Image (cartoon, rainbow, N blue to C red; front, side, top):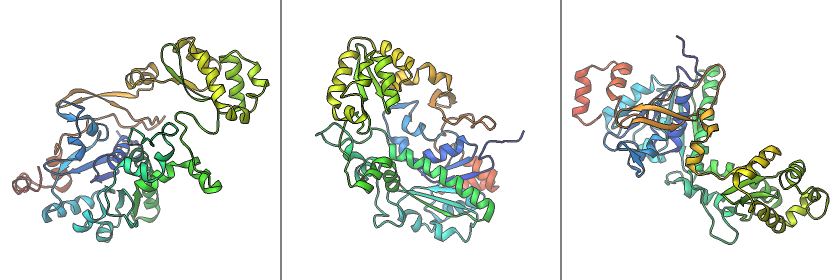
Length: 400
């Protein structure tokens, strides 16, 4: 049966580790690409050791970004290992790496060194600052880029220390840009027959995440300020406590304000009477309006207010715990938690791909691989190596 998934027939040589790169290749795997994950023979991907939490001796950090991949445990710092890389590159469409600039350069595996030998290859480099940056060979993790991009400066409560986003949000955004960039390069290669270099920096991504905040500064010179859960351009917009837990509402325009005042608060006079009858009035009297809403919400339960908010057609929801969100009926209805067998864990549960195609569904999830689980398969099936040759590589410490 023909595989009609969007990236079926695309093979990726994946040197990435930690998060942004592995998330990128996981997204491509979900879309049908074949991913050969190259790992250090002894320690593997750094995230294999990032525990707790863990299950079945596997770090859940690693499990989050490596489903639907094969693991090749290979020491490519040795000449024999580097030649295996070249042999595989000849049979792959894409190479993804997220080392510091000097790492692939020292092995003569940087794009400039291999493009003549593999002109078809799309080479995606994910780094902290980008290959052309004066900081090109510095390491950098997600929270550092959140800090340096200005993203943290307006996060948190007014007058308190800036706060980083608790998730690796820049890694996640970078992975999305990387996947988009690779797919664009695949389409370009269909026309030109040639691969190209993709230079993707976490720093650049972090700047792009500034979106309307960045536009506001560039065009008005206005620095954003900390507002906690509030938003400067609309009121009410934030967290409010009920008898049984917090809710979040976002009333972003006059039509929603009318629905909220009349249908939720049952205070129609707020729509017509100053100071809350205009956007400017609501923003200028933010504290008074929030106090009015807080007083009302504190009188009833969260479920009561959610029913009224949704019934009125106002954007709002419960501030859920992770457990509440992952066990919610709408999560199940959308198939967003997938269960798959794992050799040491048993039933492994992971958040599924959010992509829903009508004609070309994403790949059925396969558990993230054990370190070196597919080494023999890759060398035998793709490079036609015999058992004696594979055993010799293992004896010499080239593979695991």
